[in-house]
Image 1 (tube, rainbow, N blue to C red):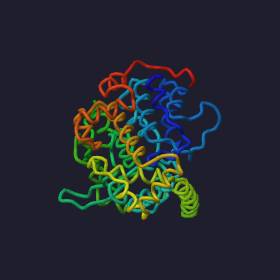
Image 2 (cartoon, rainbow, N blue to C red):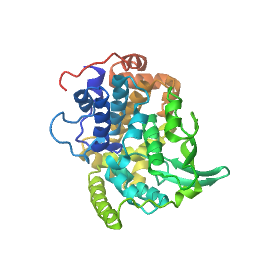
Image 3 (spheres, rainbow, N blue to C red):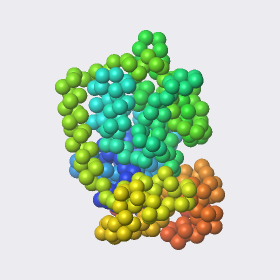
Length: 359
């Protein structure tokens, strides 16, 4: 079994971290227009190569990140995400984009993104809202509070560029004057800064952009009020379906993620946050064919593979981020599940193009 085969996960189970298929297909179509193998990328995403794909179908986030990596490699273009965001508007990819463009002001658009954003990317965040505004000594900052572990620079690039694209500058006030991103510069600084129209500080402690005060109350209204109401009604139905599809396992994953690095994740703590007893949680997970221990081990392993494929942090740092006592404990746990050591997996994670025979 190849690395590509191992990374293809079943799309039937609900994953707490997931993305709408419409976003994935938009990326794949863009990459295919630049010469990438569309059939292969659809297989990596776990999507059918023929027939119409429901844009609201969920794709596990780890598959979406892998599609980005493969697409960039096939196109030999590290700035593919930047190019994609510049040439494809968010409103062309998601109902949430339409809602943002139909909002009264940019401040209102942020509120709608926090309300409906899970329809695009259902991802863990630090705190309650995905996007927050803070009035700091050097200006107003818009922070993306998603839990960026493993690092997902393509998400940062596309998110911030779409914000810039949505902002027609009021008067002479630029929308963005500075950006902080947590990832290191992969060699795309010039393209990213050109797209944002502002300098970027890589390796920062957060993902945030400094914006103009005037921008917040700038009126958008690119669609009539009636259209805004229709869009929101449709999004409310989709959100209800998404919430109804959540398994207990998916809810447990969501709660585990921010605590992984502490190494003190217990079933009792999670059960308490779900307003369940320990036995109630055990029975619910058993009914879904899993256990708390298996979920924790699986989540650690999935994140470990993401960190190793990125090759941006050391084994010691990975062990810490995933809550292992030391590198030896991490290595043993990884080899037990994967069959190879972390080092061997890293070497295998960057092979020459391997085409899926069953794509």
